[in-house]
Image (tube, rainbow, N blue to C red; front, side, top):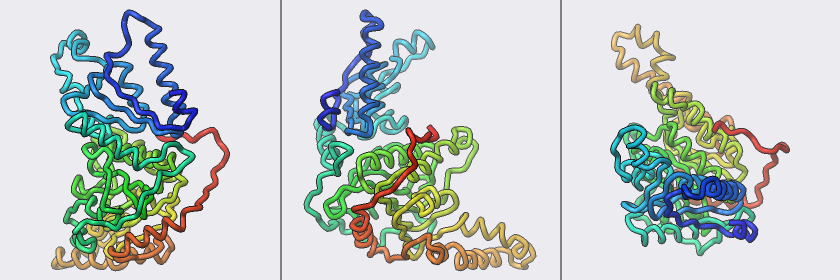
Amino acid sequence: MDHALKMKYPIIGINDSGGARIQEGVGALAGYGEIFYRNTIASGVIPQISLILGPCAGGAVYSPALTDFVFVVENISKMFITGPNVIKTVLGEDISMEELGGARVHAEITGNAHFYAKSEQECLEQVKTLVSFIPWNNLEKAKPIEPKAPTTPLNIDEVVPTDPKQPYDVRDVIKCIVDDSNFLEVQELWAANIVIGFGRMDGETVGFVANQPMVLAGVLDCDSADKSARFIRFCDSFNIPIITLEDMPGYLPGVDQEHAGVIRHGAKVLYAYSEATVPKITVILRKAYGGGYIAMNSRHLGADFMFAWPGAEIAVMGPEGAANIIFRKEIMEAEDQEAMRQEKVKEYIEKFANPYVAASRGFIDSVIEPKETRSLILHALKLSVLKEEYRPAKKYGLPPF
């Protein structure tokens, strides 16, 4: 670990451990502490990758948790702080290692794992693919490859439905934009209402953060906020431009989310975008309501380029809810309340919930046709090559951990 940091090379850990040796006492604990310390010092300097290729307990899971990417394999990987035997002794509960901390658990429920594989060979291939996308240290950019045009048969003009209530897979939009339609998704199974991952534009690596309308209508919640904020910080640490594709109606409402701390978790996204100094480009595909509009890399958080498709709806809240509040009196007094409601919804969309109002105030650089998205992102990236930003001198800020 010391040598990797000194030479500025990525480090890959292969983990299969029962944790600290009880018979070594505090000496074993000291060994783990030394590893955790090095993980922390190397963070943001060299990429750190962990493969979990067996049961890992206690201290053996904290080092992977401190690294950038964790890979797990079905039926092989196990991660837990206290094993089933301890749980049975202390709590009297019978639980298998798979149920407690199997690969699927950490890929889908806890979010501790970033990549999930069916076999060790597939896992190793995933690592190779990831390493091809990222730079080897924070002083370099990822190595470019030969540019390629998108190869997907999909037509970007037809991917997003005109009906704002109809879902679609935002990954289809990404595949219409990136070189060779090649997209490496990160944490695919966890917090699926946000999509994150790597692609290439003109041969250069970029990071994508995109709302996924197929899951929870693409809203932000506690988990998706954590997922996107961490990925944004990785991209910023390793000189990877961030492209945001926005289609979200806001933060997920409800008592459960409020009690889980959605305010604190949601603020992590605001912090990560605001702090990032790499090129930041946003395309509003459809909905951009309320705090969600601000959070998804808006001009107000420092976006370098803001584009919107013609059907984008940018407003404090959705047209139907807004019309019910703003025009409540007219609707209540109308003979046909539903007809009046629909008329006022249409009026609200024409006056407020469209991209041209934001563009007229300079919050959007251009309203573009979907087919222009790739070419304009490429243009924005070329203009951002020499981007520099200045921050006040400080030890570090205090994110809402």
